[in-house]
Length: 455
Image (spheres, rainbow, N blue to C red):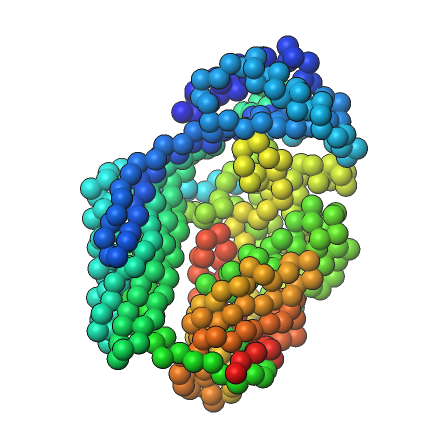
């Protein structure tokens, strides 16, 4: 597919040139995935989905626009005429300085697993059934009278991207992925609870997948009988999964140079200033083997590199794509990624890695809690505000802890605060175990004086 996409790009560029489009870029992606859907502990559907799509962006003067298509056998002249019309109807962008050039690769990482690419449909079905059964077995070991996987899915496949420009440059890459998302429901003593299994990786890591599916079964039982606690200020122990969700929604967008330039980040003007606790560092690292965000180049052909965003609490850099870098007369940091094939890139992290010098064991973190909550599940966190760092969520899976002892499961209370306070003056300590959650690598966080709205 890579060679076909490249030939398609070349044909389109020739037509764009004839149509008077001065400069252009092409972004193509393709994939082949086995997709299994679950309903009531049965695999409801098993399909193979093949996808090929691309986007073309072009400019005339300071007017820029794009088109997307899934037609792999188009008329390039038609595309050129359509794109030309869209460009002419677009407003001028006074900050426009062209598309990225001088394509090259940066750091390298393993992102293609032959074990995943070799999986056939029967093997995929067997893999999913095995881990669904592991979840149920673990739930029953923990006292469930009934348990099943209510709904969810698994996707296993290979894919690739190609980027090219009208100057004749191009790069491509291929990768594998395996993702699982399903809900385990359990009943005990007339009550019911559920817990979500989430796993995403570039390789088939059977040990990690087994741990995640067994955890889903265990935790589907542990939160039966959960109830609210009284309102007040509590210590809050975020496990890695929930810590990662807050960082993804509230903190990572603040590092985007676009958000900084457009006044949507509280970190504007903070380069060289302490923005989180002195003992914390945050690294953007595209070189991690099997990282979800690992790439040797971004979606504009700019080489990626490992870099500290925050070092010992001090902000060292924002994340730039080509456009935002040109606005400031800087170089792109290789963090330009697209939300869709024809969209402009926006600055985003590759793999966001947290480092700490205050590492405690999980047991030590729990023992430190005189009155607090352990958070294992939440909803509504997506309503937190990256513009000012405000955090909020409703606890769906938590535990009350008093004097270092876990008392009972908790749900139905709202927690709130500010991410920058949580990571600085309110941060008591962090855990030792760094866990990959999507593209974020993070440890547990113990935070003091968190607002809890309960009964």
